[in-house]
Image (cartoon, rainbow, N blue to C red; front, side, top):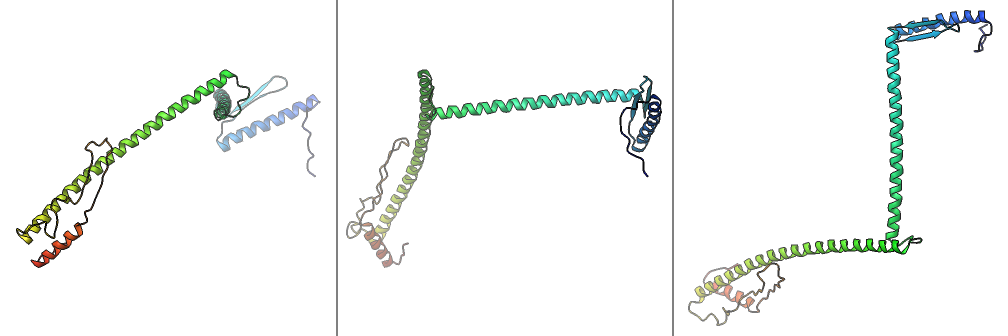
Length: 244
């Protein structure tokens, strides 16, 4: 049969207590030595008997072990204090942010005209002044955006005006070339006879030169342009030319 379970409690008999102390002390010191050798660990044990006698074991030096233990204990204590203070700091920070969020939500509701009960006339006047200042800032910003858009449109309009001026010059150049071709085809014949009135400008455009001033572009096509084109092509075929 195996040994029965021993109840862990103080041994009343002093002789038995001393014998048990001796045996278990030796076994504890032996296990500590084996642990230090097998696992390459630093082990230190200090035992005081009931009579005040001290027993100790150290795998290296008891002084160095005690100094290391003290340092580790202090570092651990500082770490725990720092951790606790850090947790307390973040808890305080979270509480402040929560309070700020509640204040912002309350102010937002008041600005929207909600939950105004309990406000005095002075508080309502201050709220009205804040709203007027906000509206003034919004209007100023809107006017600035619109002004920038108008300037951009004027700049684009000026570029379009310049492009139309170039097109106008090209149209006049083509008109002059048509007149020269007409003279080559008909010689000294009256150019107004059955063909085209040279005083007619094929395109008309009116515009202001200043880009900042609004301008109006108008493009008109004379009815006789198709007749002119047909007559020039007919004359060209007569002399063996082909116009495209």
